[in-house]
Length: 246
Image 1 (cartoon, one colour):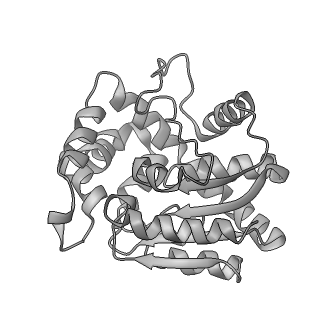
Image 2: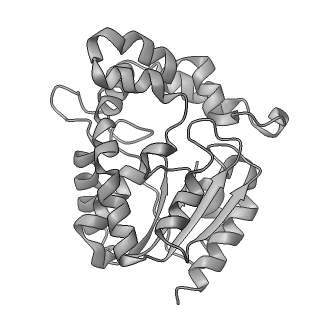
Image 3: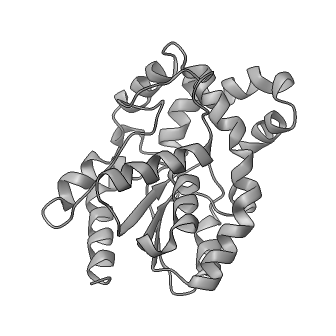
């Protein structure tokens, strides 16, 4: 997902985009031995950053990156130079209609596990996650959702993703802490949002602006993974934002 951004900004910045455990080309440890939880992911990413000597950085947080990144920031606020949020939620109201099934899963995992997997892991859900309600489907490479669907149906993935999503409820509980931190510290913040994103409520970008009035907020003609179709525009926004941090 981040490759288009990396190729456009690598001339000026040191860029690092790791896959989380259980994702992409990282290891997929057995869920019986490795807790798939956002607290754990944050610790892994902190260790990863330390191993690479990244003591001062700007975090680009998209979707699951929000819960991981906010945990890292609250644990080590001195290390975060600035924050870039792209389609990641930090307010309960930001969770849209899709989350009715998902909240039911949190309330009773056993009774709602099958419905959750359809809602989150099916081919239809996977395609919608990428395209949303964008009328210009032709702009998207179908490999984006067919490859992701194949990945999600690899052996062990359903359990990994189910475990991690069950832990997502801890993010909702933590939202007030993240909001309070932003309101108190007023971090340098760039918010980028795809207006065709059906995963989250479209009012979420302005909620960030309410917490951080000086935040730079841009809503683009794009989907949940806005870099798929707006890489040039996003690269320009990020470059301008980062130049302002010097």
